[in-house]
Length: 44
Image (cartoon, rainbow, N blue to C red; front, side):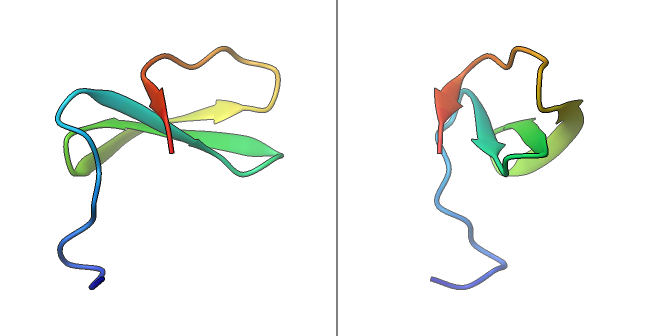
């Protein structure tokens, strides 16, 4: 998998890194959340 073509869902998604969460829609990240904040979408 190349960084230029990420494999993410077409809807909302998030990736939990422990100390923060990265949220986005389709292939574009849009929001950083703190560890305690709720995220929506599919967990990657």
